[in-house]
Amino acid sequence: MRSWLDDMLDDLRVALTGPVGRWRAARLARGFPAGIVLLVLCCSVYLPGTFRVPPIDRDEARFAQASRQMFESVALPAALQDPALHDGGLLIPKVQSKPRLNKPPLIYWAQSASAFFFTAGNPENDAIWMYRIPSALFATIAVFATWRLGCRAFDPRVGFAGAALLAVSPMLVWDAHQARADQLLLACTTATMWMLYETLARAQKPTRPRLYPILFWIALALGILAKGPITPMIAALAVLAYCFKSRNFRQLRALMPVSGLIITAVILAPWIIGVVRTIGFDTYWDIVFGETIGRSGSAKEGHSGPPGYHLILLVPLFWPGVLLTAISIIRAIKRAQGGAAFLTIDEQTERITPPLRVRTMAALRSIFAPAQGRRAELFLLAWIIPSWIVFELIATKLPHYTLPLYPPIALLTARGLLQAASRALDGVDSFSAMLGHKIWLGIGAILCAGLPLTIAIPFGSWPTKAAGALTAILSLVLLWRAWRRLTMLQFGGAQFLSVAAIIVTFAGTLGVLMPAADGLWISPKLIDIIRAHDDGQTRPIAAVGYHEDSLVFLTRGRLQKIDDAHAWVRKNPRGLLIAEPGELDTTKIQSPTLTEVGRVRGYNYSRGRLTDLIIYRAGP
Image 1 (cartoon, rainbow, N blue to C red):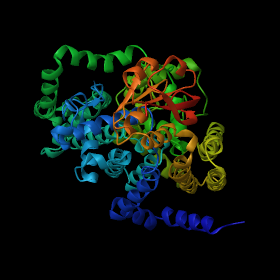
Image 2 (cartoon, one colour):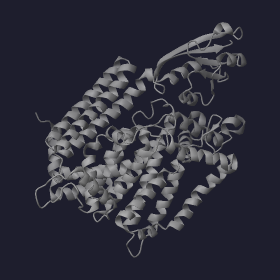
Image 3 (cartoon, rainbow, N blue to C red):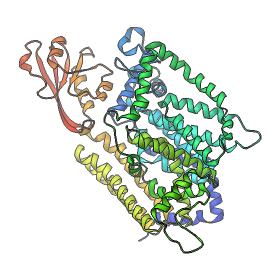
Image 4 (cartoon, helix red, strand yellow):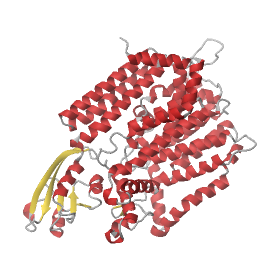
């Protein structure tokens, strides 16, 4: 039984496959209407939950607290400032009394500016969402930069489709909801690579515009201020691989390297000099070394994984765009190489599969052979492959490390998607492709049903459970319709419906279910009890056994993380203490008197276990 949605998708497919339809679609995909659609798409997946979800442990709470203290250091009157919290100013980010220099300052400046704008300069009125807005903004900038790069390198429809697939990818959506540096890094890296492509595309012209290389170096410097060496590493590996495969290193002169290094130094030097003068060169070098070489050589904080870790995670983290990623990248390699195929011996005779040894040697030769095909595909592959290998080889691994490589993956996937939609992409009906489609369907079902139900069933009330079930059902209905389109090899309709399914999943999970999942949010429950017994914010606050940074943020940095509850109570006879049962023996404390004023139970997702906490009030 056909629905209005099926009719609409069929009409759209017919309109886009004809020559006039393709021309009109390309014109729309390049212009203002496409920008509005992308903006609405970004808002639909980045804003739900941003204003209602409590602070997330642990990175988000640390970033937000450091930015808040930086904001307070310039906005609070001197009489209200605490030297231990605010002596870093705008130069040294601090979480409570500890400097936080493992990340450069740009994200803290952006978050502080956001809080300043939304509070009209009053830190007392801030909230966690004010520190999240820059992440949503930078994610949107990355999507728009991907769109413009795709319009420049390919058909504008590729740019639009690639930007849309990037915008709804789970990795990007989740990070865009957190006050962290990853979206800033993504925006800076995408802008850097866009300007690099514009520069290299004009490298052979007699008169080369200077604007693009200047913007390249500015974006590169901002990328360094965002997250250190990641942006320059990706850009350097990409440009070297591109020049090597194209056998033309002279085009590097178009980047104006001398002027560019001066621009970069001018942008970076003031902050670096200020930090070195404050904490010393040796201390700062140890921090930089530990965050770069240290993370590469040994796994930090238990974040490790074998080679192939990021490749496996790409499937769920780039869903639903991963539908044709593998076959699209293989196609891009062939087009970039210029037809140097090694899967068959002689295409003029019977197609035979060569032995593995022959195919391996042919593949190795193609790596070092000059590329004679399309430069756009070559550039995007040079952006992806060398840096991906680096991320797979370093010891420390986290899922978001490869996020700056998602834009070129999205564009190459969109390129293959448009070819498949017009029935011009070979291999989409092969056995391996069909197996991949079934894996894609399974991952999609896990995401569309698993995300809302995993939040709603264990942690929500009955209305929340009902909302979770409704979200899962709507998402699965759209996914099933996408699968029906896929079985008919209608890839455009299948991709459109799968994007709609993941939007429904995100809107329901992040906008409705997570804010209502009381069992997840321990720190907000604690802060409600603390405020009821804090006597005008005059009582010291401490926690033993529960040291999550969300509570540090919600107490505005007042929380003391302690190990000896008895000694702390004796030193703070009017304090409020948070402890697990058994951490505090009240019979050992004769004075002051201790009163249990509240109890909170919930799931500590940072430690992966259920937590039971008691709040004690010392003294009257």
